[in-house]
Picture 1 (cartoon, rainbow, N blue to C red):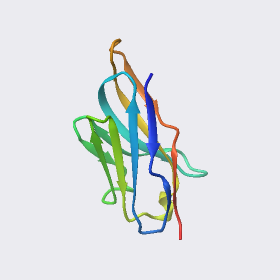
Picture 2: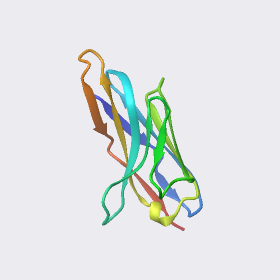
Picture 3: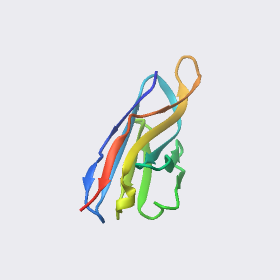
Length: 121
């Protein structure tokens, strides 16, 4: 069983910065990729950013140049550094992780519980 624990959400003013963290725990032999999705009230969940275990990152157009995703493979942890935040970034942010389980060698994909990010003055 793999669990993802998110942290770092909160209230921030427009133009401010915030960093989210997500740590994966369990019998993990390898992380293939981790990422962040977000869901704003009344809107569909959207992919924000992903990073492979090798560090290759990809971003939604709406956050390019403002958000940076990174991964620490030793800690099975992904970070999302968010800057120049806008009110439209307000959402619940969910962490996603894909990889391979130890022992069985089965692949897994799982999501965290979500953390609220509110951008408001």
